[in-house]
Amino acid sequence: MELSAIWVYLASQPLLWLALTVSVYWLAQQLYAATHRFALFNPVLVSITTIVGLLLATHTDYDQYFDGAQFIHFLLGPATVALSVPLVGQLPTLKRNFVPISIALLVGSLTGILSTVALCRLLGIDGHMLLSLLPRSITTPIAMGVSDQIGGSAELTVVFVVITGVLGGAFGTLLLGRLTQSDPIASGFALGMTSHGIGTARAFEYSETAGAFAGLAMGLNGALTAALVPLIVWLLAL
View 1 (tube, rainbow, N blue to C red):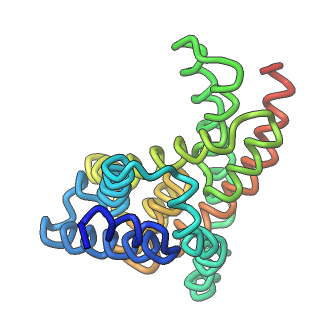
View 2: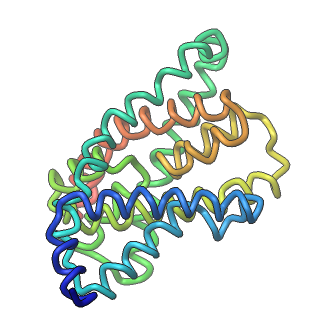
């Protein structure tokens, strides 16, 4: 049997892309560890680049890929909820820091939204594209719902969310290091707020406390941004 015929047969099997996605991510993790967690070798960034390359090389459209890999998408919701588990052990710390965390949450959420509006205005981006960009700093399931609600494109929003997460996860810790910010609560909260799931994963690499507060920031910022974005769209007549 010719190689092309074998590929046609394999490509028609629903589990092919699921297996390839898991395998690529595992290999990306090994590369990340081998390069001592170098920012540009972030496993998510490497996996996305590799999968996109495979899709282009094999002329596979996204719908066909998603049919096989959608189980991973299904797990996104439960995985996000599971991030609350480590926070249970941090409840005393959360109570002690309730006021500064609340202020940081409000300021961070507003900064993420309004800075996006300002940059889009500066670059001449408006309409559909601007609306799709507004929820970029929150986790994918919530961002897609917010984008649909305000008239953006959920598909575009997913792209912007991933880019935001990858860049934040790759360079956020470097920036925090430059700022000499070593407090696990502050650094974890900052990573979760700006880089959602990917930033939270990075925070867990440093400590469980940082990861727990990153998960908290991701969840709270998602809820607050979902409430603020439609209001800001209405107030600014975007």
